[in-house]
Picture 1 (cartoon, helix red, strand yellow):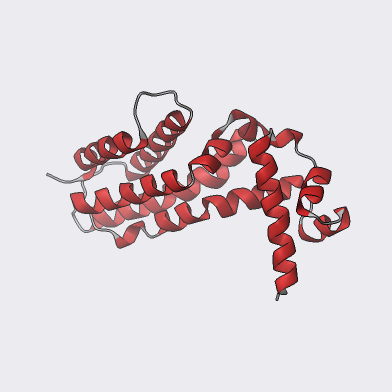
Picture 2 (cartoon, rainbow, N blue to C red):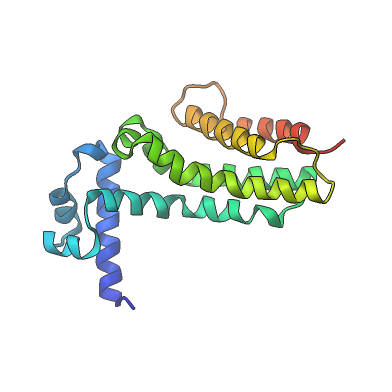
Length: 194
């Protein structure tokens, strides 16, 4: 069990790394800069993390944990329009709350450090799987009529991800709220059995 001091030190390192990641390219942040900002010795850093890469992955996992937690609870929702609205509302609320961090994560410089394939393997699947399971449950109960739920789960995940990425980068004329309303209408048409 970690002591309060150990937890404080760990958090100081992660918070320092996050601040530096937001200020400059992840590639350009060094362990020395992280330890200086955190106020810890370099040896202390290595008691908590094996490398800078380890800090980056820890940062990613903890910053994305709440959205993954929300998506893993998707099966608590039904298949009515109000359920789809609630799911999308939760995603939009998350994006608004974490906009600064999401912008940083979606920047090419962050992806290039982590490697896009690693990101897809680790995170895209963890988002697709609960959506796929939710759809399978809906198909089994006769509430959804989808021929290939795995494809649709990937399609939804990648489409929503890419659109949010574009909105955060300012590459689209839509706001996150407009996106939310439009994606709700689209998913209702795509998913709800008529």
